[in-house]
Structure formats: structure tokens, C-alpha cells
Length: 610
Image (cartoon, rainbow, N blue to C red; front, side):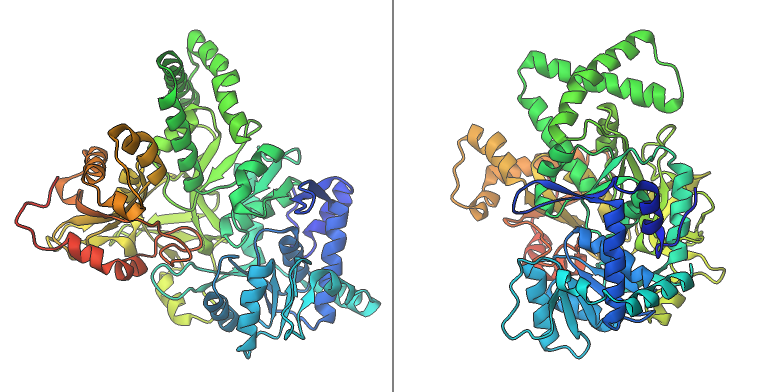
């Protein structure tokens, strides 16, 4: 198949598919899903591209997009590519300070915004900015500030370019577009410092499309994909582009809180997602199974056991299952598994790529057992998403998959760092030559910052190197691995492992208060008036202690959490403990919860073990 430059991709698809649906989105006023045909998608992109040219946006300019997922985000992307300009996406949850930082760093003078919150924040920034000159607003329901004399609604913006001169300018630029043109600047989440702008060129995306189509011939133009993760995230951006390259219908979920509702309405066959989504599915299903009457619970557990045997012990290994096992699996697949998937809205599921954070083997095995086709992988913004992912068959549980075609991966012998080289790798960071020098080896391999190991073409992730702790006893601790192990508990909502330069490993734990109340407090007759009161209750502390100890029973003594503090409120993006991609900001957590951490490591007369 031909991989077209993004300056012209959608127009080629419009010629091929015409009035077929390209995008779907939900109308807020009617609650109905609306469609945008490939032809209309192409026309909107051309109108936007012409308006950009008329508006004075030049080749090589950087354009900001600060919005939740909306069709206008994709329209703006491809219109910018037609003008040989680069898009700089920002998370819809970004604060004015974060927006200001990116605008200044990338030199953005034109910013497209989504809803009222983004407009309000952008206008605050613009009033004190020497960089930002104009704001273009997607949502017509947004109320502009009375002092605002420069902002314009997207619909009005489109009319600016309706002239022959602008059309000629865009057509010339489209013809001159090259794979070397900068496509986007993706800013890192800044878990350990200031965000850096990752440079991704069109050749990075073209190569990503090529190698994904080699590995995923399962994707056809008969599929429907749910666009759920923020399009700011390289995983969703690259996945959505791959879908559009293959003629897949893309349904855009605007409000992340309504994803369960959207799934049931659209019932997609594909959707990329992060492990956190599947962790919630796993927890919800197990909670329901535990509540079943004994006979029904026995049947459900037998169904999972059957699915495990069929999918993992036979099918995944390329072996022929016994006839009885095959018949049992088909029965469960058409009944229990199908009911489960219908409740979630994924019964048509064909492919659910999952990445962005470590996925527990327990959860992966369960999802495979109930026949949910998740495909676990690994990648970074700097690698145009995928470095490796598990194939549909013959994958290895515990790994992060097989390396992508024509990508070179090796392990640094000094610190086990995963090193990557290929056409999908970034050319560097925006105006950060000192970071470029640190991030690449002398022979051009990119330093991922992740430790791992390689077994042939199968890659394994160990830990973020910068996250590694060294206790005062000289032992190295991998906090993510411990967090994933212990956090996989129905009474634990969030956990941050601590212990750098300390005598032992500690943790900050946010309990799952709903589970505590429903499955513990009521049975124990415990009453409480606040979460603060709940986390101090001796019975609750003992419960969490026992569950933590059970989860880490197979860890070495020096790896085990010896003491912890229970927190009454969760880590959030608003509180800055989480990045926009839901990763822990460890420096922020260490600073914000310093008193609790000090209490954990206060000298005690008792041995700090359970």
C-alpha cells in the first residue's frame, strides 16, 4: 500500500472513499453521533489550510493546539501539514503556566483552543505574552472575554481563506512538502524536569505507518476505532494516523469521563489505551465475580481457567487444543465472555493496543483468558510511539513484545539501558543541543532512559533508570515494579514507592475508599465521617498491611515495603502529582508529602516490619 505524505493523505483517501464515514463525533446538544465523510473531511482541511495561509502562517511555523479530542484537532493537524507547518499539541488539562512554557519554548504565535477552560487559560497567557498573538476557538459555545479583540471562532476563521490566492499558496506548498519537513513537536511530560520538545518529522510517521502495516495486516477499512486517549499523546496520535492511513472509521470521544458510555454507543473493533483502563476493567470484573452466588462463581472461574488453557497454553503456542477444551472455550466465549464484552461495549473487539506504562502480567493473562484481544507494547514520544509489541500469536507474557521491523535495538552493557536506532527515531529536541548530545550514543542510537534485556527479537522492560532508588544499604530498588505488584489490589487505588538513600523501602498509599466501605467497613461495623478519619483507623491500617505483605511475599527482603502512610486524597494532575499521561511526578510527591515521609522514616524502637 502507498503511504502518502500527510500534506495530501486525506485528499487521496477522499478520492478513494468519497462519502463513506471518516470521522464520528458526538453532538453535545442532541446527544447524537454525527458523521464526517472523507470528502467533507478533505474539504474542511483544505478550507482550514487556505485560512492558515491567508492568516499569515508560513512554512516551518509552529502552530499550537490546546484542546480535548475534537474533529477540529485532526482537521488543524492536516491543514498545518499542507502548509508545511508543524503542530504542537498541548493537553486539555494543562495549566496557564504549562501552556505559557510551551508557547515560549516553541515560539507559537497562533493557538487553536477547544472549550471554555482552554480559552480562559489561553487568554490569561496572551494578556502577558509577547509571543502569543491570536487565539482560534473550536467550540462556538465559548464566550469570549469582553477585553478580547483578537480571538476568532474556528467557523469564522475558515471563511478567511476562501479566495484564489490562498488556494494557490496552499497547493504550491503541498507540492513542495517533503518527508524531511517537521510534522510535530511533542512535549515530554516533565516527570524529572522541564518538558522538552521532541521533534518528529514526516519521515518518522511515514516509516511508522510502513512498519505497522507489516506487523498489523489485520487492520482493514472495515474497522471502527475509538479515539479515547488525548491526541496530544504520541500513542493516540500515531494510532489515529495509522487508522486514517488504512481507511478506518475513527469515532472521537471528547470527554474522557464518558468513555464507557461512548464504547456502548459505538462498539468499536479497535482502540488504543493505557494499562490503567484495563486495570479498572480487571478490578470491576473480579469484584462482580466475588459477589456471585457460589454456583455461578464456580462457573465464572472455570470459564477463566478454560480461556487461559485454550488461549495461552495452546492457541498462543501454535498447538491444537483438545476437542473438549475447544468446545468448552467456544461455549464460554459465546456466553460468559461475550456478555462481559457487551457490558463494556467491546464485543466487536479485534485489536486493542495497550502501552504507555507497565502492564501487570496478572491483568494481561486475565484479559487474554477472557478473549479480549489486547496487544501490549512499548514506545516513547522520541520513537514515534512503537519500539516493540506482542504479536497476536506466540507472544511472551512478561515481555514488551517483538521489536518492530527494520528497527535496531541493543542493550547498553554498562547499565542495561535500551538503545534504539531507526527511521522512526526523533532527530532530537527542539533547540536543546545539550540534551541531544546526552541522548544519543556516538554511533547514533537513542538512549531511552529505560533499563531492559533482549532475548533474540523479544524485548523486556525492567525499570526507568532515573526512577531507580539506592537504599542506604547499597541495594538498588525498582519502584515501578513494586508499585505494579502491590498496587494490583482491590483496596489500593494508588501507590508511590519511596526509599532513595533510606534504610528501607516505604510507600505512600491512597486506599480505594469505595472498596473499603463496601467490602470491609460495613462488615466490621466501622463508621467514619471523613476519609481522614478512615485512613487513621487501626483496622484499616492492619487490613492494608496484610494486603501489602501478601502482594510482596515473593520479593527479596530489601525490596519489601516495610512501612507506609495512608493518604486521604488521591494523586491528581491538578495537584501536579501526576503528569498528563498519569505518570507519577516523584519530585513533586517527595516535596508535597515530606511530613508523611519523615514520619515513615522516624526512628522507632520497634523493627520496621509488619
